[in-house]
Each structure stands twice: as structure tokens, then as C-alpha cells.
Length: 321
Image (cartoon, rainbow, N blue to C red; front, side):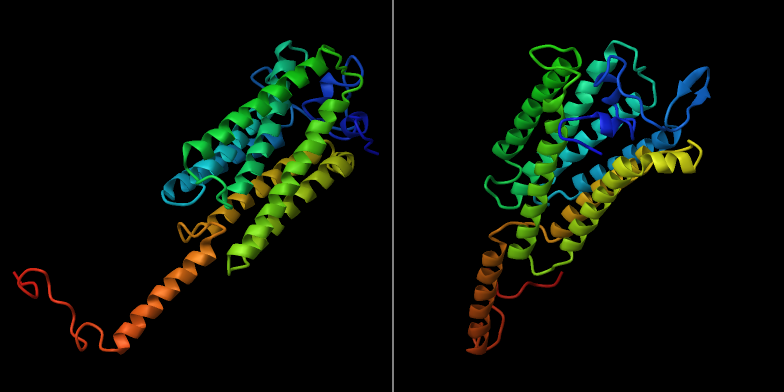
């Protein structure tokens, strides 16, 4: 059972990147984990999961391309930062779980600290993107973009040093009791995700006539929760059932990718009609309707001089050439 501030119950079930660096001096080894394969004399761990990571990098590249192609979409520059961070998290995780960077290497702790820092920065960036639709700062402006960039960098640096201090037992932190790191990974990141979801539900209900984006939010949360449950509750059972070919990390990575894809799908669905993705959009729509109403009244009273179109400024109607 998972206990507050304790990685033992987690790492005994699933081989997270942090597990070799916390708990006992040798780290915490999972009860069952995916078998490795030898390629060109090098042992590669989690081969099935690595394939999913590669697919995730390809799919994220495609999503970034489509986001950048929507030149006038609201929040385009802000949301693309989230996908860049997710790509970096995926790439680092690929290096760490595959054994390309060995757990015994000195640099493993630094790469793992960077991985944890990027995970937290990704959740933070997603949270800040949740406020973009409310137009507290106009999207695409230096204030909007740099507030996300600088704060995400601050979060990354803070969590990186917290992780390193924990792994190396510095500054009062201890790898035997990594409570602060546990709080960051599961409480802080979880709260950021919950706040983002609540903000988007409020945004859809208050500003959009279409309720279909709520389905995207529901699917995204469902994929993420299913991935968490499989990862932390059924990993050992899956691993034993399929003879160590895959474990919960494989399905957790798939579900995380699907959840990220639903973030893209949700953003795409609410920005199809450019410049209407804001809290004040309904007011703008009503203003347009009022202007149309005035035009209709003017038409009914004769319009442009008894129904004829206005003549051009020079020489009446355009001559045909």
C-alpha cells in the first residue's frame, strides 16, 4: 500500500527512474519488471516501453506542427511550450529507463533530477495554460509568454536542486526519507492537474455554446487515471502474467501519451473559431448580433436608397474591362 512520503510501496511495484536513488543505499528494486534485450553488446531495458516513447516523440512532433500551423489561434504559443516540455520529459525517460544511462553511473542522479524537474515544470506549464483562456494577460504577448517561461524555469531549477539534495543527502534532505520529493511529485503535480481541469470546465461552461470539449477533458482525465491505476496497482500482476515481457510502465506510458493527445484535441476543439476563445467571447458575439440587427432594420426601411447598392466613389459602378 502507498504511504504518504514513502517510495517503498511504489518502487516495489514499478521501476520508476527515481527508485534506484531513494530508500536503501542500493535503491529499491521492483518485485517484477520487464525483461531486457541485448543489442550490439548493450543491454536495453524496457524494450516495449522504449517503442512507446519513440512513438510519443513522433506524435508530439506532429501535434506541435499542427499547433504552429494555426497562426491566429488563441494560446498557440503558450500551449506549444507544454508539448515541448513533454517531449523533453519523454526523451529523458527513454534514456533512463532503457539503461542507456546506467543506474550505477554518477550522472544518473543528475539526469533523474532533471527528469523530475521537467515533469514538475510540465505540470506547472499546463496549469498556467489553463488561465490563458481567461485573458488575464493577452495571449501571445511578452507578458503572457515570459511569465510561463520564467516561472517554469524557476520550478525546474528548484525541483532539480531538491532532487539532487535528496539523492546526495545534502542540505538536510535524505534519500532514506524523501518526503519533500514525494510531495512535489504527487501532491504539487496532482494539484496543478486538478486546477487545470477545473479551469477548463469553467471555461467551457461559461464561454462556449458547444459542450463537446467537455468530452475531450473527460477522456483525457480517464486515460491519465487509468494509466496511474495500472502503473501503481497492477504492474506486478501484468508482469507475472505475460512472463516479464512488459509491465505497468508500458501501459502507463501509453495512457500518458493518450492523455497528452487529448490535451491537444481539447485545445484544437476550442480554437477552431479563431479569436473567440476567451471569457468575453459571448459579449463579443452579442455585440455582433446587435450590429446585424441594426443593419436588418436599415434594410427594411429601404436600405441603400430604395434597395440599390451604393455607387462607387468615382464614376458610379465599376466599368468592365
